[in-house]
Image 1 (cartoon, rainbow, N blue to C red):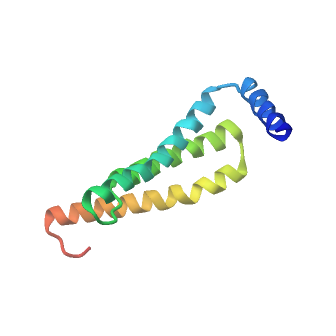
Image 2 (cartoon, rainbow, N blue to C red):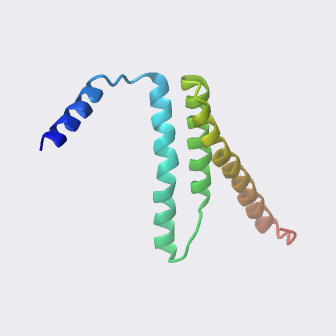
Length: 113
């Protein structure tokens, strides 16, 4: 029981020292957006009864990654955070472009997709 109380006291001390800065708000918002994309994907998969990656998934990925990159580049100057968020941002932008291009070609009847 002492082990638990020592760790709980440490957590409570850390929470008392927590300072919410504008850059932390940017980082937290980016993290919430990036994480929420999985709930969107789950919703559409359950609704359509097949695995789908809706357009909103890619928009949440791009916006969340952009906010997280801004937080790590400007707010924290953290190279690990930058590297870990750059690749998902690149992939998300690529998939968003492919998705939009496919939708445009489907609307115009162009079969060269």
